[in-house]
Image 1 (cartoon, rainbow, N blue to C red):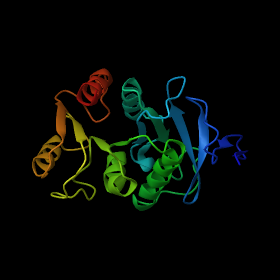
Image 2: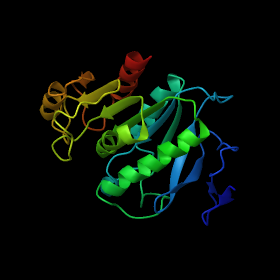
Image 3: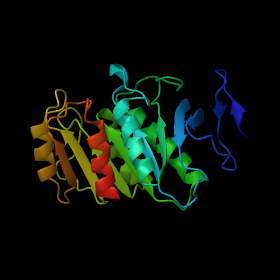
Image 4: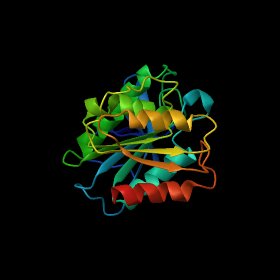
Length: 225
């Protein structure tokens, strides 16, 4: 049965009730609750795609409100998807503490499975920005995602397989002027993949896509529309 947390946020664990679009709520996670926001058009379509978007590194200010994460979610909403952003453990209203990517993958799996419970017949899209792209990449197979989007994947800092072979339709977006993730490393990594993604490089975009968020959204909608 759904209940309220100590902070007054509602914990949703009953598939008969749906959170109000755009409002914060809580999902049961591996080490407590996870704070989330679900956005969808009205009335909600039980057969529409469902999407989960993972935020950047928690120790460097990453949250579900990150502007790149928010823009990816808006792109997915424009494509008709019901889209969920969430805070990893230890961020915002989520319980726990940072776990160096291991626990964060478990958080993502819990959130994606929560979405599956509510929308069992919908295809699942999975996305992540920066550190979040590592989380999405690491867990997409286990959760059965049908599409995968990686924005500025830090391939030099985390373990992204050079020849692992993503086996679902996927897309990589990189800023050509990224000051955090080396664009050349991302380009090389993409070229090494047995099944290459749709690859978009926004030449003048930095890591956080300042003044380039609209083109970011447009590339996603154009590729997946």
